[in-house]
Length: 62
Image (tube, rainbow, N blue to C red; front, side, top):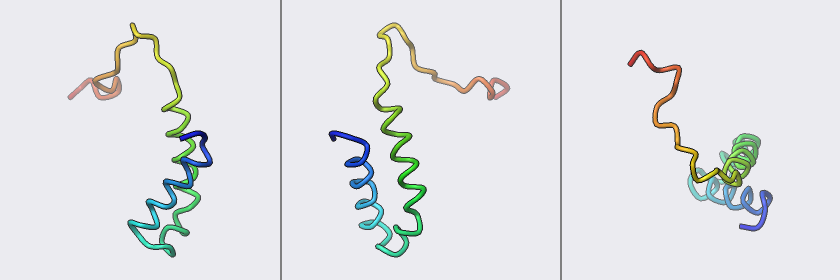
């Protein structure tokens, strides 16, 4: 996808397909904000030496 607007359109279309137009419209602000966040995170370039986190730090006691 070329930009966040196109990605958001695709996500809104998916919401309509899953839950119908009325319900998707109610969720629109959430879908738009989540789409923007996913686009930003997906665009981050990690250094090859960066290891992924496999366990959340605040859950060490488990």
